[in-house]
Length: 348
Image 1 (cartoon, rainbow, N blue to C red):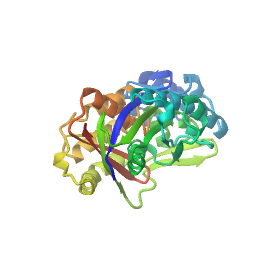
Image 2: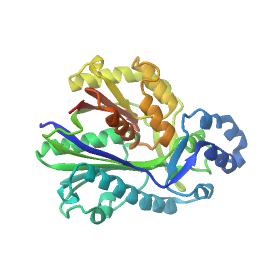
Image 3: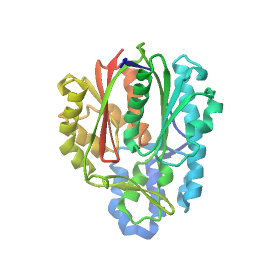
């Protein structure tokens, strides 16, 4: 199979911004009926490493009750616009026009769109009427790595074809004030919204050469991370064991993936990781024997945007590309399953 090239990468965020101190104050009021629970967990706002987040609705929207239909309507409107913004920027950065895109991989797990997002916006983006479409649901935070890897494999399998990858997540609309679960408060402190898009093709090299990908799926871990589908909307599943699990399991998983990719871990010049939370970043550094603070860009993205699920690791990659991509980079992200996705990038 031919090698694939990353031609461009673009990111997009919604217009509303909330500072972490504002989010904490609003959450204190919103969870007023659960004061003991909020007081016990309120430190997550202060210790999250997050300064601000972009969200798809005005602040007061989150203070009210919303059902499935209303939440998903917000998702559709916001996700379509984020898709257009990210995709248009990525195509322009690649020096292409929309009619030169042969296929689209869309990754999104925070709402339901049928027809899928790329079908809804195809005419507004300018995609051809025979563009190939691959919408993917359920990858969660791992979707940024897995989706880019999928688009790359599809392009490499059809030499000369150009594929657009777009991931859009509106995590904030899943914030649930009616829940008694600690994860609901953690989500209120962590979640932000955003999108990222990339253009890939086989053969030529531009920003980076995309290598092979690999994945580790742990058995009996379905309740570590994911969504519960409930009448008012999606309810987040966050197990407090995620950081210690990552610390214990990641090194062996990375070594196994590296063996599949034909590289040793000590040959990797830098990891590009999904920053799910500050404790997860700490756990990654500990497990992989990285110097404390080595994942500085991950911490910067978490500080500026919070956890946006799948797009977040691509915000990290964007900053890494701006500073100059090291020779060998391994992108990693954890997601529901429980799974770790990995993909190798090499400097062009």
